Length: 300
Image (cartoon, rainbow, N blue to C red):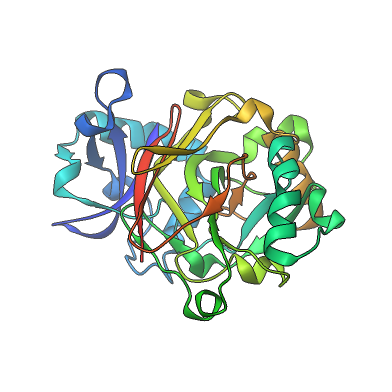
């Protein structure tokens, strides 16, 4: 199932089920508004929309009524709605570092160039936090922050598979991890390269584009064999497969939950594949992930 958040003539922040065209073609996709079947009052304010986190928590129970509404409701063309980031008010964004071997290798040169030295501790797998206020949706603008740009610091793209947590929990064993995953979406972990704290460099407003929707694991598996592609003006910037993840999705979820309680609707970036590099104002970034979808953002 593909779950989207969108604005339409009915109102903002609606929940929809997306149906793609033949062979998964997104240009032929439609969406059915299923908001009315949720058992809570619909609060469209992203800051107070607890219905979304409750839906993530209770999705297994709610899925039959959502599927029924999607099968009988009126389909809207994507051109007639505005897709939003497919998450609302997560308590946190967790991000995995150094989770592709080739990316870890390329970071030696990147750090020498942008920092004048290599930080060995940053080459080890771990997790860190990003600010939820950095989230934007498909078609949004990625705004280059003025102070780092004034200092001549590079701002890089990092295309990533992103997990959205369903039921959540603490100390989740790897074997049960996928039971706590609502689904997957595509993401960009935009990053200022400097010696500053990792969380701060990645938390500027607009530095976490997500979209176009969430795809549940019955369509993607455990996220371990998905092609990731990032292009700009038809130039391939990153091309990888999640089979190369050093720490697979279930282990990422388990490890993160050993550090902090994962709450319904939380977001986990699973790590940057090789090919990271600078972005500049005026370019468009196009990201797609196999069996999930594609989105574009503009750099300004």
